[in-house]
Amino acid sequence: MAQLTQPPFPPGEYPAVVVGSGPGGLQVSYWLTRLGVRHAVISADRSPGGMFQRFPVFQRLITWTKLHAPAEPDSRAYERFDWNSLLALETEHRFLVRDVMNADSYFPTRDEMETGLAAFARQAGIAVRYGTAWEATRRSGDGFTLTTSDGDYRCKVAILAVGMAQPWKPPIDGLAEVPHYVEVRPIAHYADKRVLVIGKRNSGFELADGLLTQARQIILVSPRPAQISVLTHSTAAARARYLQPYEDYVLGGGTTVLDASVQRVERVERGYQVHLKGTTRPSDLLLEVDEVIAATGFAVPLGDLRQLGVATFYQNRLPAQTPFWESPTVEGIYFAGAITQGAIGLKKYGIPSNSAAVHGFRYNAEVLARHIASKHFGLHTAPRVLQAGDVVDYLLTAATQAPDLWNQQSYLARVVEFSPGEGILDRGALPLAHFADAAGPDSAAITIETDAAGDIHPALYVRRRGQVAEHLLPSDPLHDFDTQQHRAQAHAALSDLTG
Amino acid sequence: MAATEDVIGTLASLALFADLSRAQLDSVAHRMDEEWFADGQRIVRQGFSGTGFYVILDGDAVVRIDGQDRARLSRGDFFGELSILLDEPPVGDVVALQPLHCLVLPRAELSDWLMAMPSVAFRMLQAEARRLRAASQWRS
Image (tube, rainbow over all chains, first blue to last red; front, top):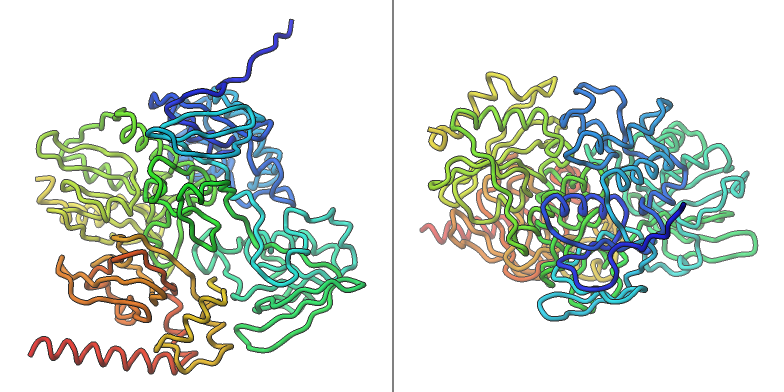
């Protein structure tokens, strides 16, 4: 007989509250639970999945999951090749997006992603109070009160995992009347029409790619030249999967890609008139088109956090964050999921982190949970003790295999601490920006980095008496960083610390 | 991209961009990214590869070499270019002394950017000459 069950986490007092049930909220809740931090998870949604319940518009993701990869199928190293599944210590809770995918593509469909995330929430036992909308925030005592549609939640620490979920448009005359990416009509609506897509990032190219078979002509416009991932070595640029419209343009196929800023959009009887000012080639242009779509990105739905003192940047779209994803202006307010892209890191060679995507922020979540557990609740994870003779092995094996280093290049580091009293301690993954800038005992950190030439190589950072020095290790054509050459250089860099 | 009227207005007032037309200023603002740094945050790190080219729009910073403060940077000043032009890691830290608002250009784009705007390259050369003169006076 079916039983009615009460939703979890009724309003009340909790040490921590997580807001959001997308992959960011689920992943941070998983680690908080494993670390013993009691917390509530609330979500305005009715089920897990976050933005993957609605986007991308044209169904398949741009993050891959390789069913066959050069790593043992259920190993930690395999995570590097499955960008979509959430992480768990238990083998049976891992790689759940892979397990629901068929072999048609190595990009999962939106439905496969949503199903995999729901399976993770169910199997890993992530409890969420769904249908509970966060509405307001105020300081109370040494923490916060979150007012929700179900009542008040008091907490010491609030973790916002609400996604880059709010459609955003730049302040351009007339653009408010133009549909945003999230309001795109069924594809048949654009049949035989001249369509202007504003924006040349992934959502703009995704729309153009989806419309190629229907639209009479597609014009993509934004001030900056298109940034292409294979050239910038970054997932923040337009991905290869969506580049068909760009090839169409460069080969003269009819699609047009313009570098221009939109000055004004006017609704006219048969569509729109759009006034443009060229950037790379200065000129004034007037376009007449049937449809305009603003693929101009998203902002974080911060509610009243700005009034609480949370500083923002990136045209007020993202909260500023410390390397541990805490608001630098309101202690105790943390961010998880895609919002963690606001902790920029070192951005070496101009390459940002992958924190905007699941395969990046899922690793931030464990580091974040460990930091919160330790800083706010005194729950410390006992570090593994290493022998001096094992340090170079550990660091180079991590460089060759560790998925957190590969997926969060120049951003997360594996850290080994040389503690006079406690021996050599494995501190796990930490933000490189924290390691580089914070004081601390003599330590070594290893990362994976991509340089201007596109070479992927390890970088070893060594802190001695408070000063951090960088040692770039060589690249390798097969990305094997555990060679004699690497060992010799790592030993030389660490010889005085490892004895 | 950093395309706001405020940014373009600020660029127009900086010596580095004094010879540019409105369309060129617009192009600079669109080509560079805006970044914000908190008080005390390091922007460039001594000995670390891969830094970019920065122009300060607002706020003050300090150049710190081996822990010693050597020069103060403020609105209109720029940094990171020597490391890029010489393809060597920076010889000092640059640390924000207060909330700092900058434009940044990835290092791979600096050469083309300067070639496309010789007047900016000339103004940069003048600034480097002033820095060299100041350093020579300091040493003598």
